[in-house]
Length: 156
Image: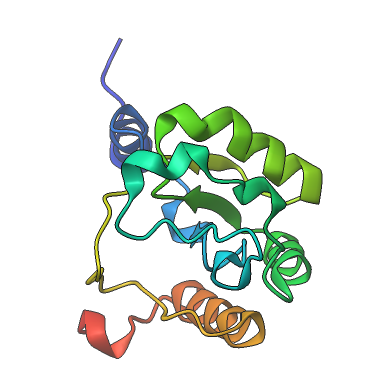
C-alpha cells in the first residue's frame, strides 16, 4: 500500500493533530460574552480573574446574547462548521453542553480550557460587538476564501 498524497495526506495530518480538514469552512466562536451574555447576567456570572471558582457560578441561568441563535443558525445554513471555544474548564463540559442544548445552539465541536487572558492577538480574529456585524464579517471572509484570493493581511 502506498502513502496517500496531496490533499488526502494533508487532511489526515490535520485530523491527527485535532484540526478539522474543513478548517477553511470553520468558524470558531467564543461562548461567554459572545453566545452567552454573562456581562449583563443578573446572577453575577462574569468570572474574570477567578477561574478557580468558575464552577460555582450559575452561568446556565445567564441570558443568550441578542441575536446569537439566529446568526449561528444563519452561519450553519452557509454550510460552515461551528467550533465553540471557551475558557470554561473541562470539569464544566457537561454543564456547558446542557446549556447549549437547552438553548438549541448549533455547533460541531466544543473545545474547553482556552487560556485565560486579558487580550488575544490573532490574525484571524473578529472583535465581537454584536451578531449582525459578526455575521457580515463571516460572509465577507467566506467570499474571500471561496474566491481563492487572500485577505490583504495575509499577503498575495
